[in-house]
Image (cartoon, rainbow, N blue to C red; front, side, top):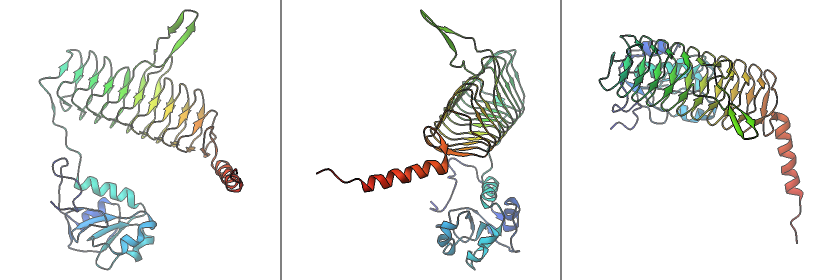
Length: 344
């Protein structure tokens, strides 16, 4: 086995080789004319003369200087660090270029249209003929599955759910009370549209409040493995176009997430909170209910957010506070710890 190979053939389809010019075009970059045929991808440390690699971080410039890669995707500012035996592919966004080149060599497996014989599809459901319905799937009454969709093994698409074109629903995921746009990817085991945590306390216990909203996943949303998104109570829970949720994220009822937000693993967002566009939320953050995170706000890992965050702010800590203030306090505590004399 080639130790430099990326994308094991047991798990990933692979096409190629590709001429250097095609690879450069895929990377949205430029490269000198060459007859070089690129056979695949590899890390800088192990790439060979017929493979392409990339670098997007100057901290690893020393590795770039010693690479044996046939070509490397880099920013123009790093061109002088590329060895003479390696052809530079220059692009202002090397990481984006690398992602596109990886997709060139390892495209997503095409959908295989048809309904597996073990799937259960209600006669009132509408399944586009170009969709793939996997083994043991359940498609309930009135559900709609759009063209080019792939519904993974054991997935459940509840009554009335609408799945837009070119969506991917992972194995054992479940969707109810939901409407999905185009190119939505729900990873395995995710739960979309279940009842939210809504109840009213009484003297004898709790009175469950009906959850009468939906979940709306707009175009190009991704929902990570085992994440959960509750449907709204009196309004919809909405995940805006292009937003990405990592694994094990909890989104409560009535939450509205804007466009192109990033929510990292183990985040919990309480009900009716709003994240405006381009908000970034680090791992294990807890956000209280009925708050607003302003456009472009960045919330550091393990923060506890208890009040609104203004647009563009960077906060960290529990309770969350401005990043600079937090680290000033940390520095003071460290100095105090060093000065304190040990007890006799």
